[in-house]
Length: 453
Ligand code: S3P
Image (cartoon, rainbow, N blue to C red):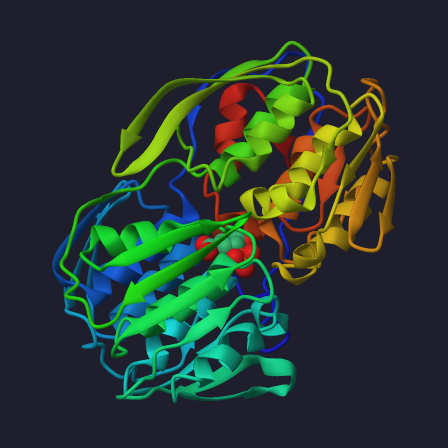
C-alpha cells in the first residue's frame, strides 16, 4: 500500500458512488476503534503477561503497530475475527528491533512509538509511506528530547527518523502547544520508565484512551479538569499487568454510514455498538444541532468505555457553526461533516481547523476541493471552513476527487456521491484499508451503489 516514489508504484484503485433507486436501510456494526486498537497492542506489549483483545480493528494502520510490537519483542497472535493475544515481558523490557519499523500511513503509530522508545535504551529507525513521511514529527521529538533520548530526522523533523532511547529518562512536565492526543500520549508513554511524575497540561481536552487504558493496566494516572483543558499526572515506573480489552466500534468510522443515512432520502439505519467516549462524540452533538434525526439507544459500559447504538433517519439538515473548542472531540470527522453541511439549509462554519492541515493529507484543502469539484460552494478563511448548503436539493456531483492518500477523504467523497445528481469518483480508494476494511461491502449491505468507475 505504499504509493511512494521509493517503491514500485501500485495501481491506484478508482471507485465511483451513485445515487441509487432506493433508500439505505439496515442494521450494521463498524470495525473496532482505531485509537483504542493501537493502544491495546502497544500497552499489551509493555505489560507483563497475556493481554486478550476482542474487537480489534484489523486495518492496515493497526497491523503496522502489531508488526512493530513483534519487532520490539512482544508475542502478538491473531486468532481471527478481531480476537488477538499479546504477550509482553513487562514495562521497560522491549528489545532493539533488527530492522527499520515501517509505520505505513499511521501518525498515531509513529508518534506513540516515539514516546515508548524514548525511554528504552535501544536504537530504532521509523519510516512510513509518502503521506506519513510528510507529516510533522517535531511535535513529539522536541519535547521527548527532554527525557535524554536523541532523535535524528530529515529536514523539518520528517521521517525517516532515528531514535536513540535512554536508560535513565527524565520525567517531563509539558504544556501542549496544540491540542493533540498523540503528543499527550507520546509524553505519557515516555514517562512510564522515568523516575517520578510526568505531567502533561492540555489547554483543550483531547481523547483520553491512553489515560484510561494505562489505568486499566495498573498505572496511576490523575486527571484534573481546568476550564476546557486538563492536567494529567502519571506516576513513573508502574507495574503494568496484562488485562483484557474489549474494543468498541469506532465513532470516526461510523461517521460515514451515519452521514450517508442522513442525506440519502428515505433512509433508516441503525449502527450498533459505537464507542461513546465523550471526548469522541463531537460529531453526534453537531449533527443533532443540525436537526438530524439521530438518537442514541441502549447506552451501556463495555470494557470500561461507554457504548451505544445509533438510530438514524434521513431528513432536512440546518446549517451549523462548530466552535473551535469542539474540534478535538471530532477532529477526524470534518470531511464527512462537510458533506452533511453541503445538503443543509444555510451556510455552515467550522472554526479553528488548523490541525486538519497536518493529517494524512492537508484535510482542510482536500475537503474544500472535494466539495468544490462536485459543485458545492465553499471558502477557506484562515483556518475556518465555510460551506454554502444546497438547501436540501441534491448538489451536482460529477467530480473526480483526489484522495491524497487519505482514507477519510476517500470515504467522504463516496458518501457524497450517494446523494448527488451525478456520480462521484475517487482517484484512489486503496487507503480506505487503513481504517475501514470492508467499507464498500458494508455500504453495499445498506443498499449503496458503489463500484468501478
Ligand atoms: C489520534 C488522535 C488524533 C486523530 C488520530 C488518532 C489518537 O490525532 O486525528 O486519527 O489515536 O490519539 P491528534 O491527537 O494528533 O489530533
